[in-house]
Amino acid sequence: MRGRHPWRLKVHGTHVLVAGATGAGKGSILWSTIRGLLPAVRAGLVEVWALDPKRMELSFGRDLFGDRYAATPGACADLLEAAVAVMQDRADRFAGLQRTHTPTTEDPFVLVVVDEVAFLTAYQSDKGLKLRISAALATLTTQGRAVGVGVLAALQDPRKDVLSIRNLFPDKIALRLDESEQVDMVLGDGARDRGALADHISPIPAQGAGVAYVRLETSPDPIRVRAAYVSDADIRDMVAVFTGATPSLPGEGA
Image (cartoon, rainbow, N blue to C red):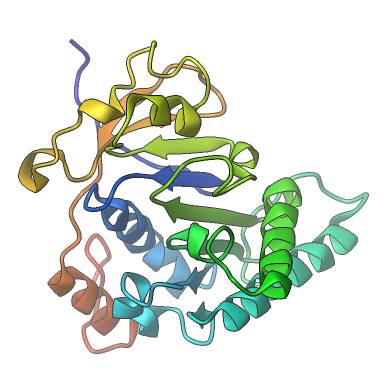
């Protein structure tokens, strides 16, 4: 039996796709990641850009994102294209000088968090916006990580016709899924045969919410993990700390 260790999700230098059925715990992964980054955000080394087309998950803590929050399809397209502009500017400046990105206050790591990305791609009725959004996402996921622009995207339906660029995410997380065939759709061929039984995760929230299998670019073997639950009160506390209403984040000095 494997020992239990803290799960640390790398988001710098990669892109991460999170898939899971309704109630599987996608919010736990998104908010745990944001919470873990907040000390670096306060130090100016990280920026979190939030796209929230359902207006449910990320809007609860929108004060954390400032003007880097978008909910309408048009605003989401604009924000994604702004991230592409940042990426391209850095690529021009870094060319011939450096091949990897180190976060600084001048060039912080930018994490673009997209909740329910399918609302902006497969389910987007405006063809012009759909093309803009899909092009920006494809550009970010093919060129962004070397210059410090990453994407963390979540969705419910992992079919290829819902998210055609899913293979551009090097690291993938499968929460509870409805069908066994969906496991390999998310984690790649052979993942379920290697033990990623995401379709067997309990639908009872106390038992299965936040439980997932992770398959990293550096290893074909899936690892079973569980994300911490981040409550509404936790998010309110995060916002209060970030806006200066309370003195420190958990783990920071007073």
